[in-house]
Image (tube, rainbow, N blue to C red; front, top):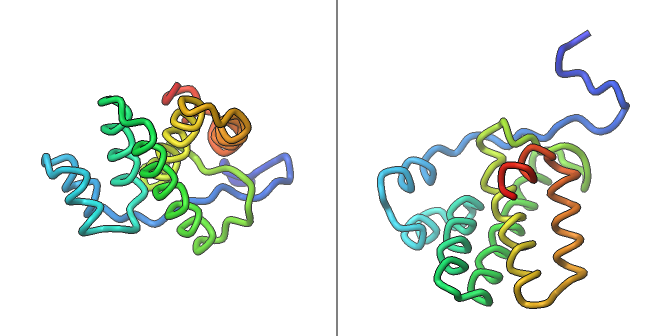
Length: 137
C-alpha cells in the first residue's frame, strides 16, 4: 500500500506540472502584470494581480484578475486529469497558483456582494485543499 493511496475511494490528487518561470520572476521582483503578460496561462501571476488590486481597494479589478487565474487553473487541472472534483494539494507548490486564484475569487465575490459565488468558491477551496483554505484564510 502506498503512503499516498486514497483510502476513501475518491479521485486521486491532481498535481499540476511545475512551471518555475512565473514563480521565479515574481520572486525576483518582476511585477505580476509583466509576469502575466509573459506567462498568460499562469494562475499564480493572475492571483498576485488580484491580491494587489484587492489591497488597493480595486475590488472589481481584483475579481476580474482572480476569475482569469481561476479559469486558467481549471484549464490546467483538466489537462492534467482532474475530472471536476478531488484533491488539489496545497503542499504541491505548482497547485498554489490555482488555489490562490480560487481564494482571491471567493474574497472578491464576497466583497462585491456575490454571496452565492463566494460560498461556492469558498467550499470549492475547502474541498480541494483544506490546508489552502486554512493557510489563505
